[in-house]
Length: 417
Image (cartoon, rainbow, N blue to C red; front, side, top):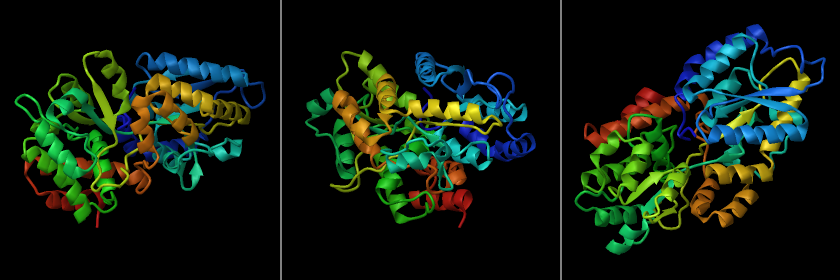
């Protein structure tokens, strides 16, 4: 599965949005004619995603096929690497071969919906009740829902139970407790804490819980609350509780450090759980990300993909695709998919039941309740803000600038006054 922090297609989408709009206008987003066209019975539809890796590709293929059988069509699944998805959408729009059902990384939806290439889901009567507001926001553009996610993900704090017990350290719930615990857990050859602070969207994704939970906003990065959040990361590095190498680590690298016993705690996502479960000697737990003060609720970013129905001249094909999309978002489908992928069902009642059945996911289920879409505030401008955030992280953690200076620069260059 592609990291919910966003695929490289996210970068490409910003450059190609205008081009897609021109293609859509010129072609009308035409679909293939013949069997399944507006004048014939629909027997099959096409679906495009970026699940190229196993077992995700096969699992999604089985789910799409099952939903297709339910609504009476064969679903022909095509998968491309994440970095190729948006260019593929552009090419298909140009050649009038857009799929009937399209999966998008949720931060990409705004950019693609803006072009007119997608259809609002309300015209098909799809039930979106019971979805957490943040999850609906991830699939919404200008007040209309264009995509729904069967499941979502976010980040939390993983910790090594044996290391905490040996040091007599409780699982931290606040920033002060996190700093104290990280310092106490640091030993020769082992750091107390690890995050992904590399110069990519992944570090912006990992920083958002600290920014948002402290009342900071991506619209206005040059504020004391934003600086306080970045100062926390700076302090962890300065005090030796976190390696300076986090400046180059990906989320996969952070995971590897944790598994190797070179860090006692880490920020990461539930997609790491299958690998953690394979190590029978590793005793780990997971808790919500620490907050500034006791009693606060962490505000984390939503990861995951939304399914959409592209524009096409065939009403019948669009309706069949919408029926498959609705099937993917039925409670039974959500629950089965979440168990396969270690993700959180998007309907709140299903997520609560899931947390009882899979205790290792309880912290993620709890965090999703208050989670936000990364595009909620800035829409298509979010990638610029993300670039400003990870650039500021690099500057502050290397000591080139103070957190205040780094974020002021980010505000001026990425967001604008």
